[in-house]
Length: 198
Image (spheres, rainbow, N blue to C red):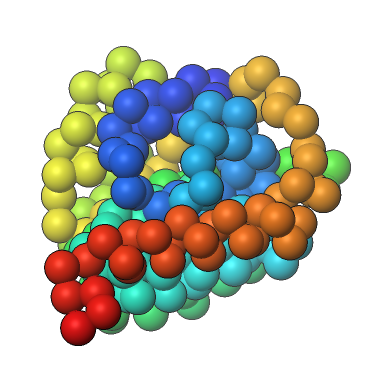
């Protein structure tokens, strides 16, 4: 098991300036602490929707990488999204699932199939062309550059344990100002496209 925040610190080094990141619950709160950006989209409040929100963004923004930081409990609430994502096959979609075996946001109750379910196996069966699973930081760090260079959709399971606890600032994640900053950042990207205004 790897500390979740240490995994995300490794991933943050490969983010890129115009990469959009969809973070759910604890992964999202950790990401805010590690890699602040107006292009962070916080899917907090409707468990399971992060993968679908990320898909919509990836399809709308095909020239920009979209990273989804999902949780195992969240993905279990929307496993059908894996089939839809694979069928749409967005080449800019990078799906990371932080697997700790718990519904951590709701009191750390164990998820169904804890210790036996294979999320990478689900993704592979759904049709994701690239799937990975890591339980050691050094192996993840050695492979993350290659993972982010692949044509998506790409699915990666990270076997994690909670690291340094991040503030659970639901007011920030769901505020109008946070949403305004995200939409303004997307509008800025669109305005910089060569065909903008034509």
